[in-house]
Image (tube, rainbow, N blue to C red; front, side, top):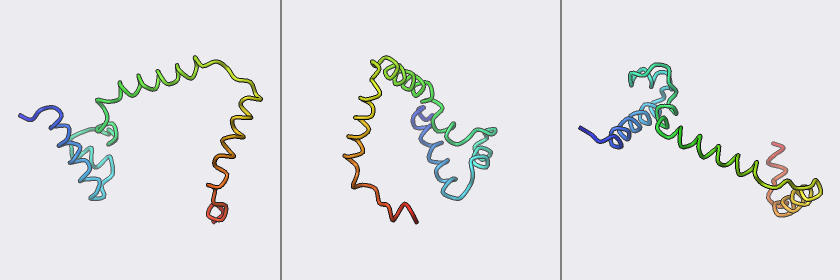
Length: 95
């Protein structure tokens, strides 16, 4: 019997192959015997708890940072704007 990671890789490869063949997530789910589960849920089901934990930790870090003044925020935005002022392609954006 295949190990869990190998089995998971087999399922993932099958999903990718079916997607490349032009099938949508519902059809792929039916092919794999799943009921209405989107492909990303099939692919990442085992990782969801870890992602939720990481997101919670990120927002806790944001929440725990000391507040900044409006002037500091404006200064930060101005510096960021200056750093990237030559990166915007106006003619491409207007097309």
